[in-house]
Image (tube, rainbow over all chains, first blue to last red; front, side):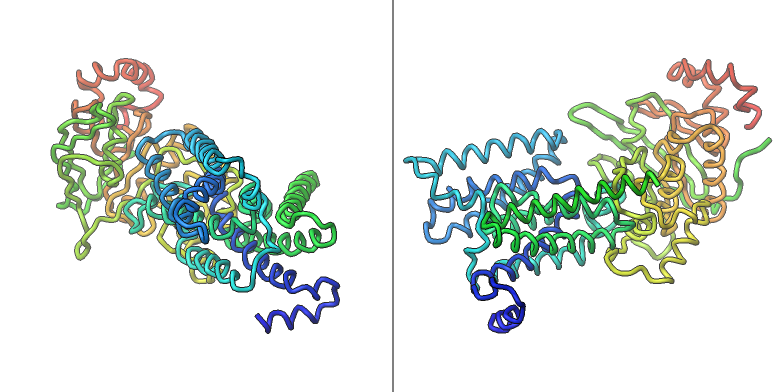
Length: 280
Length: 260
């Protein structure tokens, strides 16, 4: 960490004096490309509603987690999210029900249950940090959680990004080819659940899904192949993460919101550029 | 006029014995037995909901079934290689998967995040040449037309060369000229690689020109034989009445009988 601090202090900005900003910058640089890279696969497999569900179910997970341990509810939250992710997958593959509707049901039910549990005794306000997140509150030792996420994402991406991209084209093509699409998808769901829960305190339930979706959505417009898609999405994630943090510092508003707005801007410009290119 | 492709590697057959498949309590097929010889093009026809696709999915191992399927396997392998061309494939229009990516992925190569080596790329171009689609290598699959996509999917399904190739309604996206070109392509592949080819099709006129053998399926095997035997049978007329009259009315145009 000392090494990181000394690098940052070289930069000629006012904010480099603040330790929390340096830690937050490192955090943003780890988490935003990791989420953006995962987002390529979320968007490719039309799972944006799924990450939405996992994000919102964090409220219920938090309530359940606090029942077991008020000091650190995270282990229970992770367990809850993983069980939910697997349950949704099994439910979808067994019933062949319309994914969109099922997700809608799960999202509403888990959000409502979370609010009901957390608001007992009228004390919901102390949990609002989970709704909007606060990256500035991250401590140097907590960077470890983000590093775990990054490692898990990279590992999955190296070995399974291809398979999951093939599933997005045609699941039947995977049958008889070593890996069962259901297993790939379930492992991926667990990864998404892990990311959401480990980062939710700093990113926020209301915002996390945008971090998955927006960079990939913009990258899809330009990418000529999968390699470009992955690279571009991670880059857009990284750029909007850093830019968002800076903007939030100077405007004194929420960092997560600023990050999302920057990537939304990049998406809008991408759509515009594509239109102009087609016209010419 | 003879559109049949000849040559057979002989001997070996894929044999299905008393296959039954159930879908949510309803029987799709019950107790059917079929056999497909290596080097032959076998067509499965029958009314909608008669269980044609269930047979393919059982062979793929995609759905649970009862009965036994013995594959015709080239020596030295434990499991059969199955090539599969799905009926309809809902490619997302905005999918960033390129044709090259797709071919690499479908042969099981997972590292599409790496730069594609020149050698790998050359191999994929060669593969696309078989289906005359080498110019599509760098296109995004979401941008392809129906016929282009069909050829790319076919290229993927014959790489690596399968023991048995399953085609599920392969010509729905094609016009009549495209259909003939497609089946000629299939026939040339069969000659070249001596594989067992199984086609499920609605387009009885086109498939009967090219198939060696035909099964009429409606929950059970109604009848089977050469296409001309099947089409002229009483059972065919009973099951497929409407198609029968259309076919016999148009036989001079389509060479249904003349071609057989």
